Amino acid sequence: MVVDADSGAVIDGREPHLRLPPASTIKILTALIATTALGPSTPVPVSPNAAAMPAMKLDLRRGQVWRSDDLLRGLLMHSANDAAVALAERVGGSRQGFADEMHRVAGLLGVVDDPILDDPAGLDDASAFGRSDLISAYDLAIVARAALAVPTIREIVARRAPYSFVAPQGGPLVVRPQNKLLSDPTVIGIKPGYTARAGETLIAAATRSGRTVISVELGARPQTMWTTAQSLLARGFETPGFLQAPLPHLPAVVALPASAAAISDTAPAPAPPPTTAAGAPGAADDSGDTDIPIAAIGAAVVALVLVWHLGARRRGKRRLGRPPA
Image 1 (cartoon, rainbow, N blue to C red):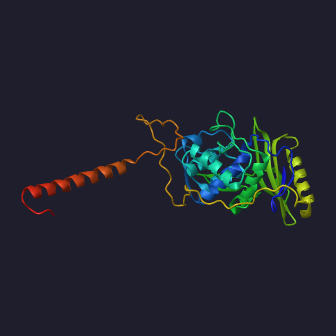
Image 2: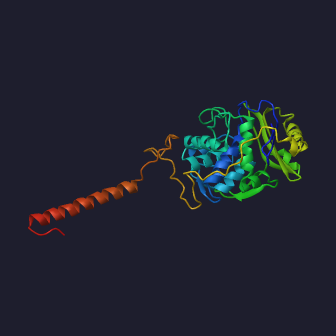
Image 3: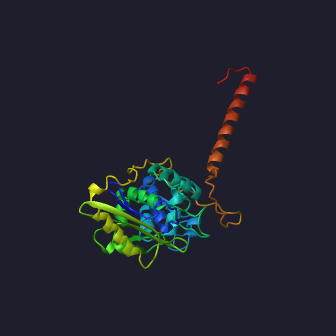
């Protein structure tokens, strides 16, 4: 599918409403939600779920706390699955909570093909959460167009130079872009993907003479995916604006409101996962339930004791014939 990003005109497509596995291209939606909810320096703790994700990954380790901006670059440039889950759990409270948020945001963006959006990384094997993601090229174009309207995402997916930062375990970590089309100076991103089930997938975008065009490929052949993207982009630029008026158009880009779970840069990281009596990690829990802090229980008990004690003093004073205090 090829779309004029500025007008939303759908220039060409083949079965654009067929739902297929998106692989890592769905990380564009994960990034869009994360940038809405998290500031650039928000602390993101690593749960056992995130640390257990298969490659590609940043080697996040349980109990570490990473910066959200580093994870976003690892997510979009390196396609890190552990970064996807860590960000998802930070925003949604659990992977189920984030899956609910994915569906909510997709609805706000105006998707039309009833996508299945459960896994923030686009995994579709035994390591996936919930059902395997399914989405159409049409709906992915809607997501990509909205993502490119966010300056943070647009800067990351267009980055050609490696990104270096200091990881929590110490020492520098370098992530490099995987998009081979970035060798073309007009290309501005955005994300390739692959799983054995999905095959090769790619969302690409380029800007030429003030116009931006987006192409989407699902189930592509590895031998032709990159050249097909170039052909689709060229077709988009060759279609003048006056021919686009009668074409079908994507819904208008909407600015996403911050979700109820929006988190500030200074918000404390969630507590680490519970341990068993022997100190071993507890079972992974995606229910979203939160344990009541022991300190809060203690404070409640103290308050009850004080109330009872004051009541006892008043009752004692009444028995001695004194007026209540």
